[in-house]
Length: 85
Image (cartoon, rainbow, N blue to C red):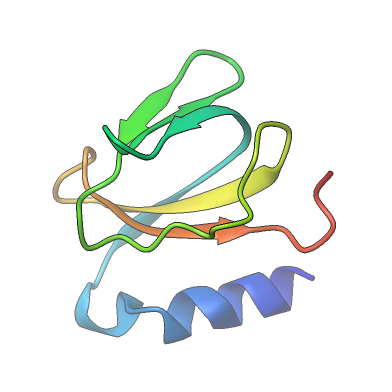
């Protein structure tokens, strides 16, 4: 499973970025209008307009966020675990 996630991260655009941070969490809420994603535990992230969001993402889903190390507020990718509910 980890190999699949790492492969997906590589394909989804990390080739142009030398460094990225990975954040794993469980979705508490997501507001598509403001593009704010809240994770259980209190962390929240504002997703830039170009960041694709899996349409099936719901509260309770496990996600991995790929974040730009140069700008920790810049979420590059949202990955949804296949059977995360």
